[in-house]
Image 1 (cartoon, rainbow, N blue to C red):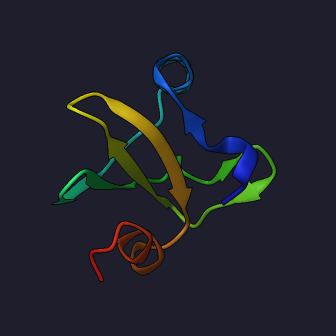
Image 2: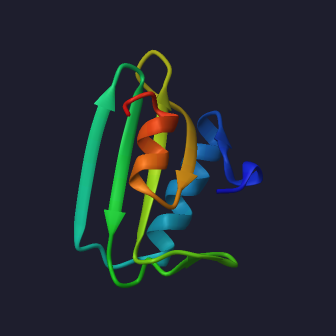
Image 3: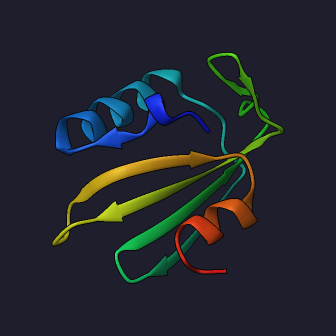
Length: 90
């Protein structure tokens, strides 16, 4: 969604997960799709309404880039097709 929200490296990834735990958003469904070193995570739920001032419509998709196992980068997308395309899966 915004380049400044992209997580680069272990510390930024860990900080993002900590923030997510603090927000305690209600999740109704999760979807995982993997292709090589890319994993797309789709989350849907009533409390997924915005990230900062960016409106969401009850869902968000994250593209996780793995490097030799650990997550090295996270990119956020509003839509499934956009995320799958970014991950090279569409």
